[in-house]
Image (cartoon, rainbow, N blue to C red; front, side, top):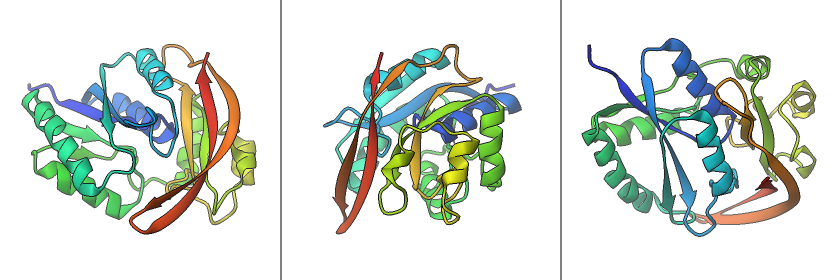
Length: 230
């Protein structure tokens, strides 16, 4: 029987961590590779603000081979797709037929991923798709995963939620219009411990910073919590 090889798109946060756990539990696919894109200018995971050093520590603790792809800060779709074309072709030649994502219910995101990957005959897999996000976040906590809030959409949430660990107290503070998993980009996390890790990732919490981005004639502001590796 052919071994089904897959790579997982690792965001450094809770949803990709949970997606990896789900795939390992199902045992139908084997995750041979973790891939993350970072800003070539800042050497950080976009929207999460996680430093490359902490990202590498996550990979080392998980124990799966990885690749970090550097892309321009706030690239156009054309720039992003051109960079990914080279890497996806290489992955396909190495026998990877599946790509795993932690998306839950955003149809336009799923459609975009499936459309792009179909050009390389790679199938997109969404192990969390359609799940109740209230249940997902509660299970995340009960399974022993640990994650800290590292960025929030400043138009929706306040900076007081930064650096809080994902737990029942955090969930009680979320407004009713905010998805419990932050699936609409309300908040982002750094996952530092749990059943997929061999050891917890040590870090220090530093200052909170407000950053405003302008992309395709739209502005968005995010609060970031600076994390430093110990």
